[in-house]
Each structure stands twice: as C-alpha cells, then as structure tokens.
Amino acid sequence: MANFTQGSLSIEEYFLGFQNLWTDYSNIVYANVTAAALSGVQAVHETSKRDQFLMKLRSDFETARSNLMNHHPVPSLDACLSELLREEQRIVTQAAMEHRANVSAPVSVAYAAQGRNKGRDMRDVQCFSCKSFGHIARDCPKKFCNYCKKQGHIISDCPIQPERKQGIAYHACTGASSFAALPAALPVVPIPAPTALANPNTHTHF
Image (cartoon, rainbow, N blue to C red; front, side, top):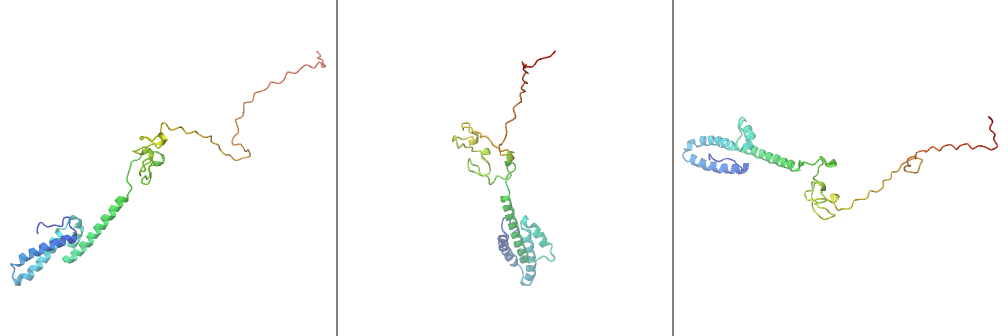
C-alpha cells in the first residue's frame, strides 16, 4: 500500500487499484478492532483514505490536489474523484490541442535568398523535376534533365540544349505616326555653294 502511486495510470485506473488495496488493508485492520470502536476507526480511516489517495497522485494533478486539500472542509473522496476526472479531461483536451497546433505549424526551413522564393511557404510547391513538394527544381537534391535524360542538372542548365533564339522585340507606341520608331537622323554634310561663272556678256569695269 505504501509503495502504490498513480504513476502512468489514468485517474479511473488509479482509483480502482487504490480501492482494492485499501479494502485489503482495512480488512486486516478491522479484524483486531472491537465492535464498539469500529465506527470511530472507520471514520478515521475514511479521512486517511482520502488524504493518501490525493497524495499519491502524479505531478500533473498538483494544482487540483492543492485546491482540494485547501478547501474547508476538505471534500469527500467521491467529490475529489469527480473533480480529478474533470481535471484529467481538461489536461487531455489541452494536450490534444497543443499537438494539433504543433503539427499544423509551418516548418522552419532555411531557403537560399533567391528572388521571389525568399521567405515563401514552400510546402505546397511541387518540384517539376522530382515531383516532390517543398522545393523548386533549382534546389532539387535529385536534379534530372528532361532533355539529355541525365542527372545532376535541370533542363534550363543543360549544356547540350540548343540555345534559344532571341526574337526581335517590337514596341507599340501611340501617336500621330504609325511607325514604332524612327531611325536616328543622319548627320548633315554641308554642300559648298557653286562658284559663280563669268557671264561673257557682262563686262567688268575697272
């Protein structure tokens, strides 16, 4: 009896085990008590039974035990049992909520500071190289090129993939002119004035 504690048992399991041991203990004690003194001994034993039951609870119920022991008067064993069952349910519910919160919390992953992926939640991002989630192809640990069918790089970094031809970019503009852009003005080359020809009919007077 002295070594029995709640341990990892639930409140109900602990109470049933405690009750069985206490019944055996009481039968031994009451066997040597006279009928006249039996009622007094039983009253003392009921108080002792309640106190020992509370003191053998595990540390999870320390607050509940302190509250019960500080009541004036201290509640009966049955009342204490009901309160402890409610406290146990509260503890179980709180633990379940904390577990769900930890599972659903975003996993802290260190990403390279690369453009738009910096600080981004990558859990729903699928890698087109390995089809796994949580990273992009550039950061894939299982890089595979769909062009040369080799591992170690992706198609955009493939050394044998033909280079893409860059198209001519046209820009639309609004205005009176229908041309997108006019060529730059050519430099103006000055043309020398023609030399005056002598008129044979004109006489020069000196």
